[in-house]
Amino acid sequence: QVQLVESGGGLVQPGGSLRLSCAASGSIFRIDRMGWYRQAPGKQRELVAAITSGAGTDLADSVKGRFTISRDNTKNTVYLQMSSLKPEDTAVYYCNAVILTTAIRRGGYWGQGTQVTVSS
Image (cartoon, rainbow, N blue to C red):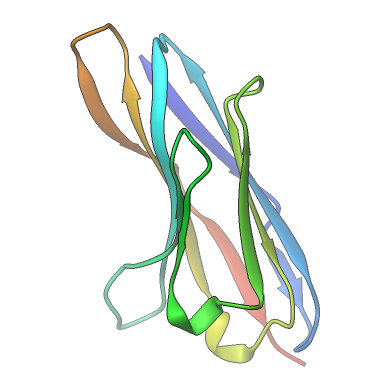
């Protein structure tokens, strides 16, 4: 069994910063792509940022220049550093990872979500 546990959400003022973390644990053979999605009330879940096992990154246009994604493969952890936060960044942020539990068994996993609220 695999678990993704997120941390680091909270309330922050506009222009502030937060750092989200997501740690994977369990029966892990290898972790491929890891990423962060978000879902605001009444909106669809959208990709915020993703990072491959080789550290290639992809960021949504709305967060380029403000957010950075990184990972620590020794800790099976992915991070999302968020700066210059705006009220429109308010959402539940979900961690996602493509994980191989054996050499041939691959699956997508989600964290439970962490709330980020940007408000004065």
